[in-house]
Length: 162
Image (cartoon, rainbow, N blue to C red):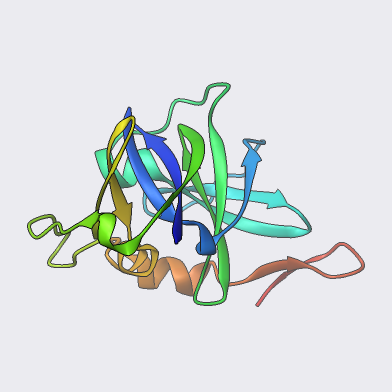
């Protein structure tokens, strides 16, 4: 059985593979970063680390997330790095078998298929995001990676940019 964390972005449900999710956090104040693509909304300090925030509304719908009580940071791990996805809501974890995933042939971003397929749930259809392909499809992602690599606090509390 596979599991997906169901998130909502702009009233649409998406699935993130649970094995890539490290935690779900309430939204806390963040620090903006100048000269970054619009989808990078800033940095946030969570669990002894400083993480970049990727605004899922900006990425998927070209509009900034309007923060509310249900807004969450979904912390994910990709290629050894952690980042925070800002979503409208983190709803539930859904278990499914691989054969329940329906193929999606036509949805591409700049030639990259960012979805692994679609899952039918009791609430409706959920597009399953492939984290690695999704992040690699982002405009200026190489620039973002070069500017915001791993951020951590050393025991003295100083921030190290690795």
